[in-house]
Image 1 (cartoon, rainbow, N blue to C red):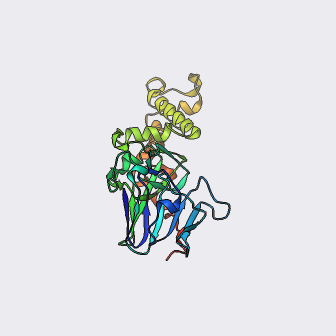
Image 2 (image 1 turned 30 degrees about the horizontal axis):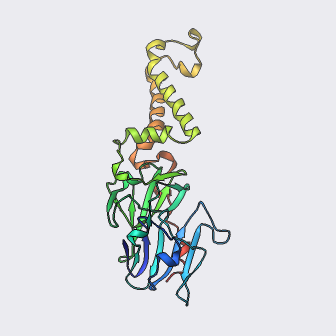
Image 3 (image 1 turned 45 degrees about the vertical axis):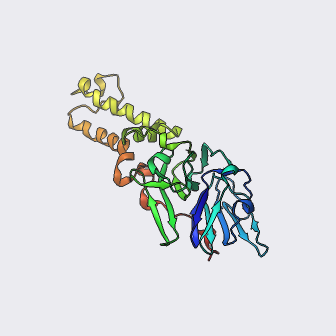
Length: 287
């Protein structure tokens, strides 16, 4: 099994875990000058989430990145065209889940039995997370490719991707080709409000309950006044039907905000313009 490298910075991942994950055993091609990864869940005391390895004059890698696995994406700087070769007999099982920190993560594309360069629907692969956007890099054109939810774009086995998630969680990578993706927007809307986060779940339940009350109560409280009923004043807006329009419209806007396309799949919390570009500081010293 081989991962092809082009001259310059390559953003890659290993499709399977090698039995020996030592960096000097996995990457033996001497044209590879450095390897960098980004691990926000296990930061280094000195370099933070960035972990690096550079090849010395003795041909060996040194640095705080000492092993390579299929749980991370990697920046690999090659002087010329090169390959990362992993013997088929020297592989362990792919991970089934990968922990994610809120914000940016450098993630692999790994699928059981899938060869490098296999295309996987991005919505299928990232669909179990609160993902907002993903980026990969083309060393030939020196350009980024951005992927967003519902774009019908693919990710590629063997590449690495910057993945931005709204909340910490887990990326399930065990056979995503077999995942059933429910039609947007109903399942995504329900999951955004009620899958994760107690505060968001409480707000969603409260808003849905109010919407139900405001749509049903007019049948019983029309032309009524608070003194006539044992109900809080804010529930008996009474008088005319027009007085019900404002609270109902407000609740609908709040509840439907996650699926308003111009606000993005994460609703009011994350607009595309507010998302920074992928971290670059780990590459500042790279040629």
